[in-house]
Length: 289
Picture (cartoon, rainbow, N blue to C red):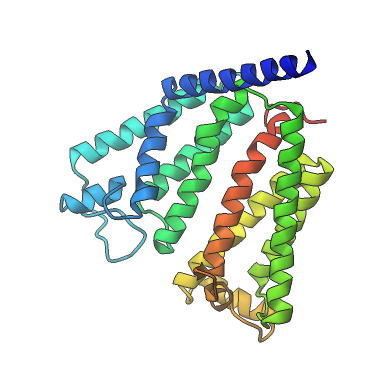
């Protein structure tokens, strides 16, 4: 009987999840998510508003000084941007009873649009990382407001997040001791963020978990920008702090397996952000102890 009761509760949770997903699409989230997902999967080939604008021959707004400030996008690109922004606003309005989630979903939508329009330095790696970061609250916030995971799944998720962060720290220390890869200041920031994620997840400290994830996302994105633009002001700061050690750009460019470790670190923190989002439900709903 207990087994039947458990399956019934679990089935009800899954049904509620799908129901909330349908409500999220009705709120306009799916339009933004589909557009952002197309860009992520297309890897800059043909997806994304900026790529469509470029294909049409229209100049694209960018931070690069080579782009004329009078650049004009075609009307259909402007309309698509208006639709995306309207979709984000509608989603935020649907979360008016949970102000923190509404603000977070709005910020996530802004990140998606900014990344879509290529208003960020650092190339595709930065754009995709920022887009994925923004998609997490944009797509999950409506679900989080309606559905809570069963207790045993939350604890397993906490354990998984904590262990993943600890494994990442162990890998970083192993690379330093075995391969002689010296960490840069941003590498130390990432390690501290991973430690915060591990302690926050395993100890149930939601604010520490959120701070660790946000710090790691910021540090890894800064390192990707340094990898692409070694002449930024951050390079001088890294040089001063590291006292003759490796620059942030050089340290992040070291290839581990199939990609530079800076890009892999950014991907890791995006994954931890997506996994931790469900664990932060009490905090995001204003019910944290």
